[in-house]
Length: 169
Image (cartoon, rainbow, N blue to C red; front, top):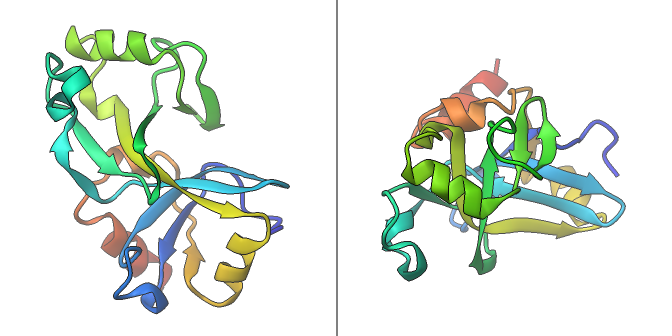
């Protein structure tokens, strides 16, 4: 296990992943333990918005992110408002994964929860134990020193490029 990798870290794909589904992606790691690693691509928008999903057609239009290739029939959410959304799992600092989704949707629709404070993901990225470490060792991924807050504060289109450029210094 990579000792310095922990939830809240941000990784970026390297040129080795060009021409793959992971070309120019930025991923926030939410779990890294003896069972493996889980993360979410936060710089690629899903082609539909939240209110375009049948179950949520009466909701406001919230961007969906293509979180990863695993369980793309599932919706996951990350937020920085534990004061409003209970039962989330802390990732790092004030960033939480999951929680009371019904309450989060209600708060989004009432505009009490700003859209900027939530990220909705279709699917996730997952690696078995030692699989992620092998991909780091082969040079497919680069660990950045970016703050987890970047997930909520950067534009989707420029996230990978900004991270790549800052890592080259």
